[in-house]
Image 1 (cartoon, rainbow, N blue to C red):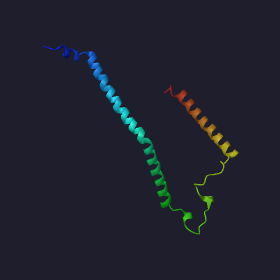
Image 2: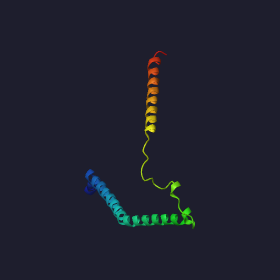
Image 3: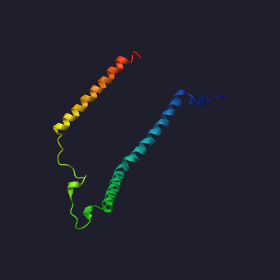
Image 4: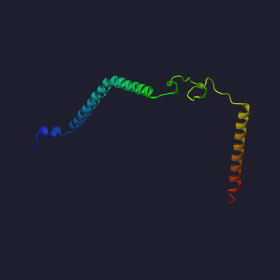
Length: 123
């Protein structure tokens, strides 16, 4: 014979309370995990910064350049890594050439579309 306590524990309210309690525990575990991550974040950032600095230092030490050789002067005229002081202006001739190419391509596209529209339905 079921006791009143057994009937009460199987009620929908009790099952909902158990579900909410489990959900609350899961949220608390997640919160604790995120708090630990927040505590570790500055340490991880410093560690990454230190590793990056060590990597840059290692590359700088192991990489040899032409200037590392004694007695050789650096010639910047032919080096690609030297930034240009100003952008080169586009010449009028180049601009006209580009405009002409654009208009010719537009004309060719128009001609192709005209041919497709006039002769394709009759096939």
